[in-house]
Image 1 (tube, rainbow, N blue to C red):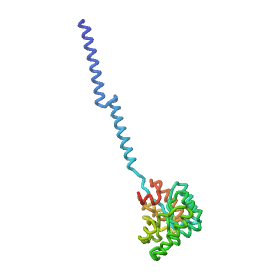
Image 2: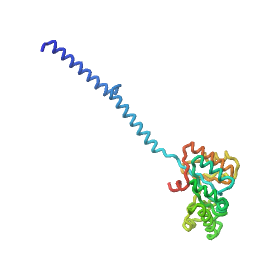
Image 3: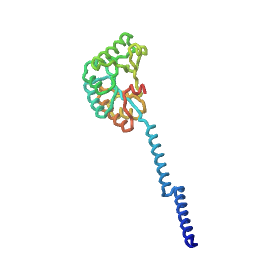
Image 4: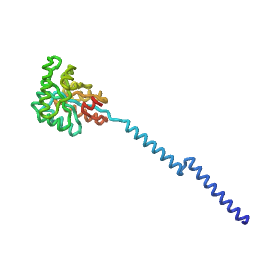
Length: 243
């Protein structure tokens, strides 16, 4: 081979070597080459995983809205319309006498997926009655409601929050109290009721309202709207109790 041709080959090999070396350095330094793209892809995957884990960990706070003393011919229907429009299920503790007088509302409560509870037949303080009379108040309400819905009433809200523990086992009912009480029956100021509830609301709270006052119905629907915007999920009390 001539010396000139040998030199050309040597120069060409040198150029190819330098090209490969620069290409390799571009990958290692994470420039605009494939190495940089792989590094970017790796970061994107890590970010996606972190975001997914964060979304799994972030669970919506749950809250239950409950209503005592119904059903009311003048108020309960309007409340049910508003809850249905919002896709919300509530818990209703019915007075037996009122349920007897408004069977269509009781049936609607059941058919629309609300949880129905017992609030005695005539709204009496259980602890001031004899055991026999106390049982009668609860059993009569259960009889009225189950005749309409075909279901035994498992949950009980004793009027004034006063309860006899021995009745729980004897009658197969569970007492349900509350954690937020805006005393809606004492005022006609809707804003006052709403502010009291939304300012205190936390995960797993149980709100006490009444479905026999127009102001309470107005307040209830506004409370639902506000808390839903804050990310709360409304559930029935059984979901709170057994979560």
